[in-house]
Image (cartoon, rainbow, N blue to C red):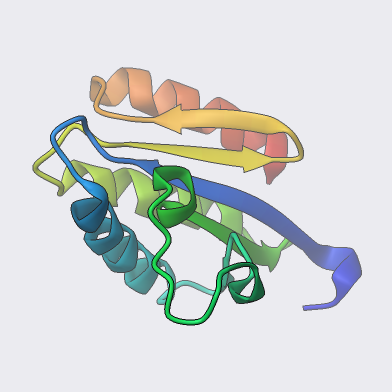
Length: 128
């Protein structure tokens, strides 16, 4: 990907109220692994240099945040959003994922299929 055809999205996982930092970290790792199978680059939201060596990030926003870079062409973004939606559907908790592209944020959570599809389709049309 060249810089000119690359888009970035901040993907932020917000675990339900029952989850602690360890659970959120486990969920974020599983989500990151699944996103790693897509045609995009999964980057850490916070550069590793910002934490002292051996330190654990306990800030829930940091733990559950990933920056992803993908080609603006080729339909990668709709695939990303669909993967996030499917991942949420397989989880036991009532987690949410916020996706931000160019200052525009969509919140994915458990909703009816029709509501979710309408919201996602509108968001994807704006950024695909």
